[in-house]
Amino acid sequence: NNAGVMLLGRVTELTPERIDAMIDINLRGVINGTQLALERFRAPGVGKIVNTASTAGEWGIRGASVYSATKFGVIGFSQAVRQELRGDGEPIEISVLIPGIVNTRLTRGVPHAKTPTAEPEDIAKVALKALNGKRFIYHAPPIVGPVIRTFDMLPRAVNARLQRALGFQDP
Image (cartoon, rainbow, N blue to C red; front, side, top):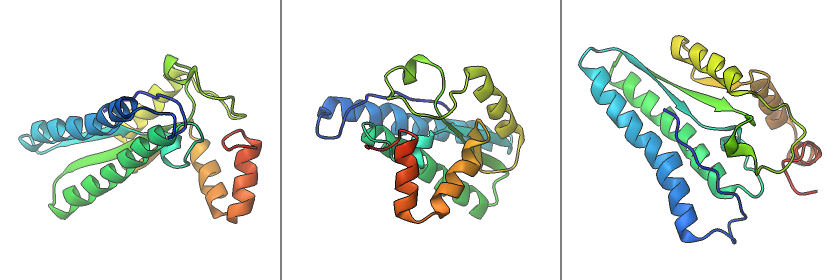
């Protein structure tokens, strides 16, 4: 379940139309796709949903505040649906694919970050693992997950300095 547009700009620069477009596609699109998938999977009583978010949904990214918000929303929505399915005893599974920067048209306007850029084929391999796996979160490339978890354990000031060094925050 992959829906995404990244209309860059600081929140004060984005028009209501651009904000609505990102919310409609990035978040509402994933919600609608999940609802449709659940309808199909309920009859046979089995299925796996993999919703695509972004590392911007784990770390807010400067100049991409609304995009980050929609991807945070995809992760939170997927967590809540997972709890609903488990609480109802449903055999349907849900996971979230969290790619970093991928070499596609979507990321061409992204400010330079000093992190590896993945190719779409790399993301597809991780998506297949997510489809067949049991974990909730799948980072692509896989090194992204441990890096984010390590940064998140650091004191806020150290974390911010490292994010600035990597190009994710203003200098």
